[in-house]
Image (tube, rainbow, N blue to C red; front, top):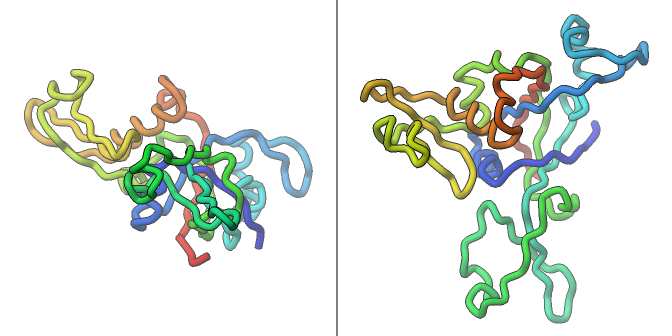
Length: 218
């Protein structure tokens, strides 16, 4: 069993914590064949046996572990060193005295989180390679998306749809057609993907790694 770090946004950390997120997608980059050593495009890898796909995945294979990196800050004691950890995804303003007196600590980006600060561990169940747009509505929900209709199509903040927010990041999205509510986790996931990977990244329909996992105890 191997253990690797993986980054998640605050909204997705909340979905991991409540158990609604059991899947993630990451853009595929050419990999070397684990036996032959030659580079493989995704279109070539999908024709390989499943055990080759498992062994080629940079995030690990079934049975391996992932520890989650998220935005955090260390709480330092007056006489001791690092005594506790705050996590931005779940932190409530006022939990620390520094919030009240205007001396709150600075948040550290997730990429710099050390293993000892991580509070979430995942066990990989399966991995596969597919085109991004092959994602199903059920897969979108497994990605931690919550379809959420809020109001008429022209009432959204940008005038093109209705939108819901969790903190400052996407998790909810809904839309209606001529006033008839239609709930779509797929539309939500598309918005989430483009907010992370940029405009047009959904239409590019890249090959992606799909990693299924379950949360485990530390």
